[in-house]
Every structure is written in C-alpha cells, then in structure tokens.
Amino acid sequence: DIQMTQSSSSFSVSLGDRVTITCKASEDIYNRLAWYQQKPGNAPRLLISGATSLETGVPSRFSGSGSGKDYTLSITSLQTEDVATYYCQQYWSTPTFGGGTKLEIK
Amino acid sequence: QVTLKESGPGILKPSQTLSLTCSFSGFSLSTSGMGVGWIRQPSGKGLEWLAHIWWDDDKYYNPSLKSQLTISKDTSRNQVFLKITSVDTADTATYYCARRAGGNFFDYWGQGTTLTVSS
Image (cartoon, rainbow over all chains, first blue to last red; front, top):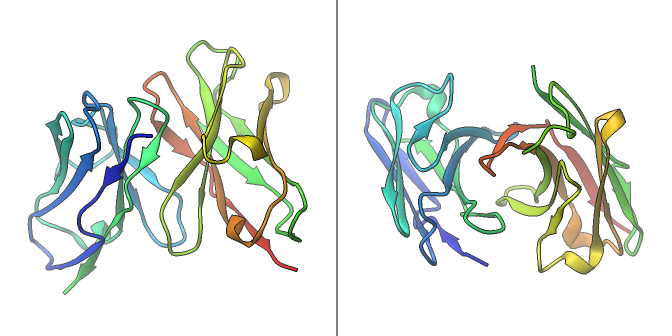
C-alpha cells in the first residue's frame, strides 16, 4: 500500500489567512492525488483531482500543487465556510487517504 | 443529477454479517469507466477505502480486509452491495458509497449510513 501522510492533524488559523496543507506519499504517485473537504456531519466533498484540477463549483481561492511524492492544498484568504477537515487521497494504486488536517479558527 | 444513498442495519452484534446497499441515480454502471466504491469512517477518525466495483464487474478490495469483504452490483436496479463478515466493535463507523469515474477518485458521495457493533 502507498501510505499518505498529512503532517499536521490540525492547526489554528485566522479568517483571511493563506493556508497550506501538505500531503506526502510513500512513493511517487504521478499526480494521481485528490483533495477532499469534510465538514462535521457531512460526507467528504471532492475539491481537486489530478493534484491541480479544481472541481466545478469549488471557489478559486482553493488550489493544488505538487509532484512526485509531495503535494499541497492552498487556500487563499480563508473564509468561515472553509473551516473543515481536509483529506488527501492517492489513486495511483488502490486508494489510500491521508489522516486528515482539521482547520480551526483562532 | 448524480445521487447516492446508503442503507444498512444500523446495529449488529459481534460476529454477524453486515449487508450494505448503495442505491444511486444519475449515472449507470453499464457505462464504460464507471465504478462505485465503499469507504468507511469511524467517529472522529479518518477515511478508509474498503472496496470498489467497475462497470465491467472488475472488483478490488482493501488488502487488509479482503477476506471479509464481498462487493457486487445489480446494474439494472442501479445498486451496489457490500457484505462484511464477522464484524466486531472496530467496524463501528459511518459507511459511505461514492462514485468513481474514469479518474479513479471519488467525485460524488452518499450521505453515509452509520453502523454500531455492540453486544
């Protein structure tokens, strides 16, 4: 299995901050990387696929980058509605998820 | 409009078999490249992929759970099923089904169904 590591399980942010969430794969996943947002009580929502492709309807303040083993999800100017837990998932091989990064407001 | 909805027993005793159903609309599993997967999430914890099935009936399982899992589909009824044998308290979780399109990520998710395993 390919292991996905999100180094921060949670961190506190302020509204308007730029936020960067990192995800590291145990081997090269060739940009086969998706990001999901999950709010309490809800199912995950796909934000980004192919490491950089924003899904329809996702605000442009979200962006993805990276290559090889290392990937990031960025949120410019954090809004209240962005407070959630974010998961990465690789699909180069049988799917595996990162442990999640929970954003909290300071 | 793509929708998925999970259904299950809600509560089971240890050693029983879990049967889950995913009923979906807005796409067909007779379409090349389409698939449906199951993912679970214990309360307050992360996501774990369990299994998925493709339009051509190809099936894949989480290696750590493979011996307990069986996924199947009824294309005509737009349903996917998952059985998990010999459940125990560690299987207490919310179970989601989700669509996998050609990109192999999960683009639409159901609302989830919760399972509690308790004696």
